[in-house]
Structures are given as C-alpha cells and as structure tokens.
Length: 559
Image (cartoon, rainbow, N blue to C red; front, side, top):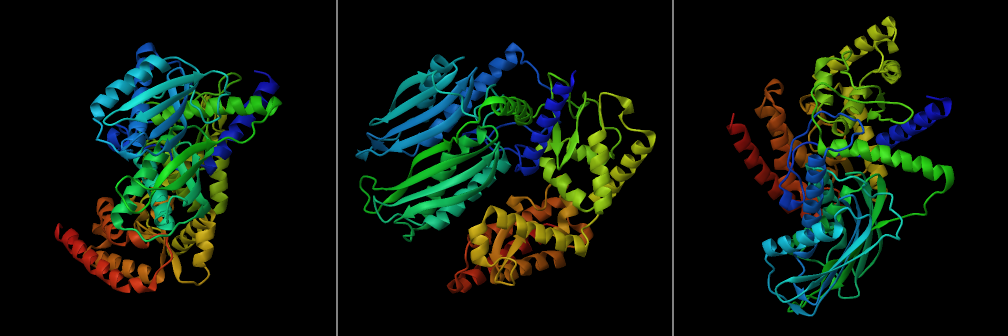
C-alpha cells in the first residue's frame, strides 16, 4: 500500500471527520411531494462504497437530475407574471449531473397571462435532454416572459473552471428532505420578519446563507436600506414562498459553501406599493487553492461526494453499514465523532437497538449519537470513541479480546441509555449546549436578547427534554428543535405542556403525541419564535394560549 498512500488516507479521513463534526443534518427522514422540490422514497441503510453505476441506473439518475432541474426552474419562474421579465439560470453540468450556480430575475412592464405548467415542463425538459446530455461545463438558460408563455435561450461554455460545490455524478433522487425543507423555511421566515416591506424601488436587502451539503447552517443579514415597512400576512407569506423557492435549489450542492441573496423593491403592474423580488441568488466562490493542497482537496471532495450521493439516494443493503479503505479507495462513515472503517461487514459488537437506529441513515443519526454519547461519563465516552476508531472491519482481529469485551460493555451502556429519561443534571447540560449552539448560529440576535444572561429570553425545545428518550434517532438539540422566545412566551408555552402532562401520565405518552403537541404550540406561537418580544402583544399572546389550550383538550380527548 505504501507509507505515502496510507498517510494520504489518514489525512483524507481526518478531513471527512472534521467535516462531519461541523455539518448539519443531512437528507433523511420523511419526504414531501416533488412539486414542492422534495423527493419520493424512504430512508435506508447506508452502504458507502464507490461504485460505477450500471447503465439503467445511470439513465434513471440522469432523468432524475433533469426532473429536479425542471422543478427548480419552474419554482423560480412560476411567480413571475410580467411581460418582458427575464430569468437567467446558470447550472454546472457534468455527465448528466446538474448543480445550480446562480439565478437572476429582472422585472417587466405589464401583467401577463398565466402559463400552463404542463406545456412549460414538456418544452423545458426537452431542452434539458437535448442541450445538456453528457455535456461538461457551464450551461445558461435565459427565459423571457411573453404574454402567456416563456421563450428560452441556451448557451454553454467549457472554459469555466468547475466550481467546488458542483456534483460530478448524477443522483437518483429529486427534491430535498423534510429536514432541509424545514430548515430553508425557517431561514426564509427569519428573513421575512427582519425585512418587513420595501419602501420603494430603491429598497434593497442582502443576506448570506451558509450551506453544508443538504444542510443549512445559518444566515447573516448584509447591507440593507428601505426595509421595515409594515405589510400584511399575505405579503409575508408570498415573500417567504419566493425565498424558499430561491434557496432550495442550492441545497443540492456538495460541501460547505455560501449563497448570497440580493432582494430589491419592485413595483408590479397595477399595484401601488412595492414588493420584494429576489433579484440575484448566487453561490460565492472564494479563491481556489493551488499545488498539493488543491490536489488533496479535490480528492477529498470526490470522496465526500460519493458518500453524499449514497446518502441522498439512500441505498438499502440490509447486511452492510459501512465501507472500504485502501491506497486507491477510501470511505469513512462518520457519525458523532465516531469513525467506522473497513470492508462492509455488520457491526456485530454493538447493541441491537443502537444499530437499528444508526441504520436509519448516518447523517440523521449523527446528532442523535453525539447527544447519546454526551450522557456517558467523560472517561467512558473517550474509551468508546477510541475503541471504535480502532475497529478495522476488514479483519476480525483488529481488536484484542479485552478490547472487544470493553467495546461491548460500553455499547451496552449506550443501549441502556436509549430508553432512559434525562436526569436533571443532563437536562441542565443540554440546555446550556442549546444556548451555545444558538449563540454560534445567531450571534447578533443572541446578544440583543441577552440570552443566558438572566435576561428576558430563553431557548425553548419545541419537543421538550423530558421526552427525549421517546424520540429515538432524533437529536433533541438539533437546530430545528430549538427556538429563542421571551419569558412571557415561554411561561405560556409551559402552561400548555403542563396541561398536556397532567392529562397524560408520563408512562402513557407516545412519541407521536409529543410531536402532535409540538405542532399545536408551533401553530399558535410561531410568530414569537426567534424575534424580539413586543410588549404590546400581550393580548394576542393570551388569545393564542386560549386557542392552543382548546386544541390540547381535543388531543387529550382522543385518548
């Protein structure tokens, strides 16, 4: 194998490990309809091995890529209803894989008639098949809005260097996961609350969204002017929908990256007030490294993409969990700081419940296992990670008998913790970790709220810590389970959960009921999530509490 090759494998493995520990949730879990840019399918066992696609699979993957690109473009243009408007969409194409690089929209002059989606889809998909095919390079579609249709111009260039986030192999999946959709929806909602309405054509708002694979890590507001005009709920919902459609296509890229959104005030024909329009959305490309660093990074990205593709396609193989390692082929399955590497045999040393949850998908389970490991004493946690890192699945003798017994003992400890409620000390620790996570993602908002400084704001777990043991495979401290709320809001939410708790004995509560209860709270209190509290909203808060209590009574009445 050679010392240089082994060292290179170690470096790549460390890169993957560091990447995974910093990454957000990946695609897995429940799925939404493809019309909303989300896919079909169910999660499966992760089997990470670089493989050449058979021709039928390759054709299917290319069709899925074309269908996904079509859905992305339709999502961008369907709300543009001005004659003379123009939408430019840039993709990177390689072997049938299509990665969105940017889109730009300019307005028109007069209101247009609706466009038939079926006719548009049929024509544009034909262009995708005819013009893209197996082409490698940048492809640009420029769509011109006519009275009742879209005309399309196409051009391509092979002189542009491949961007780092571009896929190199087509993926047999359309859309995004529920987790990704929820994260994008949340970011869009946060932007809408900050922006308000534009004062006129000169209004502008710039924001940078941080992505990592399918995950949304956070966002920051940039320069803005002419923002904050009071608008109605219909306008807010319309803007949030436009932001969602603008951002979702970028979640199909690979690796960490930033997407910059530029919104401008726009006067639609026949309307007296301005609205926001996403004028430009583009992936930012910092200066590329050179020399040996560039070669190593390129190899790492190729490895990372192959792993990510397997996750996205959610390949099921009931006998295998992870992978292969060698001078020419390296794959790590990284989950919560633990690395399993070798030649695809079942991890028989760990407990069955633990394995069953991990088999739901490495990325989704990463945060859950990380949380579970935090419940072990520090010495046991370090021992578990150290032993797991030594497991070489290519050889049965990679651990001594004593090490196998110790790993089995520690795995059994984790198995016992899976169904055990959190202790008071553990809840305290997880609350502090939640505050730390929120501060890192939203430093300005956390500072304004004086979060964790005996101020008026606290982090609320949408699904409470006391029910964490029921939510198997779910990271209780995942970002989508955390919201910052004021103390008045938090007190009322606590009233609701107390009502639920008193109506259901702890032993009688199911994970489904906890999720239903969280949905009730979200439905009535979401407007107060992650925003500074307005003291004049006390009356609205009381009304929301009463309505939520009635919904809880209905939930409890179901038995």
